[in-house]
Length: 178
Image 1 (cartoon, helix red, strand yellow):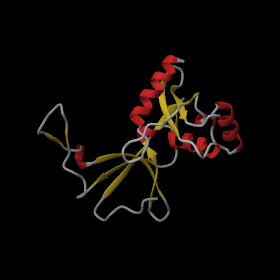
Image 2 (cartoon, helix red, strand yellow):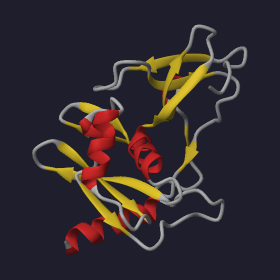
Image 3 (cartoon, rainbow, N blue to C red):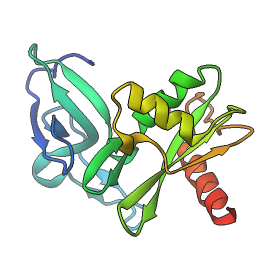
Image 4 (cartoon, rainbow, N blue to C red):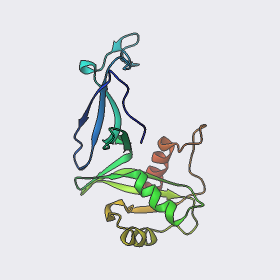
């Protein structure tokens, strides 16, 4: 959890198809910036519609009104109408291969909307072991990536966080070459 909202901040949770609990957090209040400047319209501030800022976070409010962040909208895959957290995919891989790095990304899938692809630095990474682990720990089979690739390195930003832009490019290249 990340605590409660500050006073004078309004919120609303917008439903996200495939997510049963919580929703996409929008906020409005004195803390919200005036808007965005875009390269397509230099010097012009585009304010948020009706003052509502879309945080891009999928959240749940608990019984104490504290916010629990479930993930970012960009870090979910939509598979057959269900929303699957890419963080869950990475956490499953980390449970099996804790000394290695793992990064999940999505690619379009003509039948199910999207498919999940996992990159891992684990020498022994494989889909079958991920599937067995998910089944024995009550994790939905939708969280098991369709494709798994062993890579030498997972790209990171200067902050040490995973560089998901580079991960997505790696996934596209690896799948195209496969």
